[in-house]
Amino acid sequence: MEQERDPRAHLDHDYVGQTAAAVAACLREGVPIEVNYQPGDMTSYQLVFVPLQEIRCAPGRRARSAGQVDWEPRCQFGVSRSVGCALIAWVGHGATALDLAAGHWVAGYISGLFTGSGNCEALAALFDAVAEEFS
Image: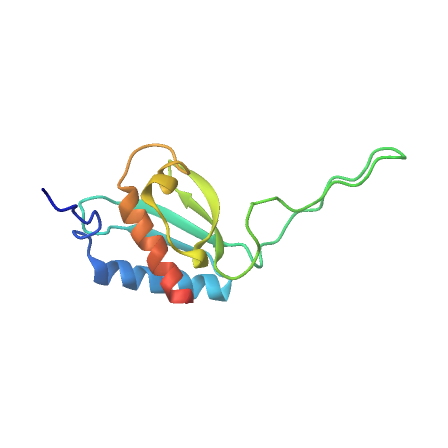
């Protein structure tokens, strides 16, 4: 019987950890960060992390007539606006909001959030390493 192979074993864990530390530091500061993530598996991911805790919003749409209500000016991201929550864009593959501090990221879940192909285990490793920075 073959042993199950760790899909993250071949990644450059030092690099992943350093990248995660930089991402977590920017999220704590409320500053966006771009990452040309190259986890050591011959892939590259152009990622942008935008912290949600201090993101500004444009004015909401005003009601046009009596009986109507003003529109909510804020987007609904599906996550809180606490430290660790970010809008993550994978350039060319879409964007999603995640609470990175939550941890336990699974590649199968991540692959459903973005379009196209890539090693979602590598992304899960980065997201988990960011979560560790918050624990």
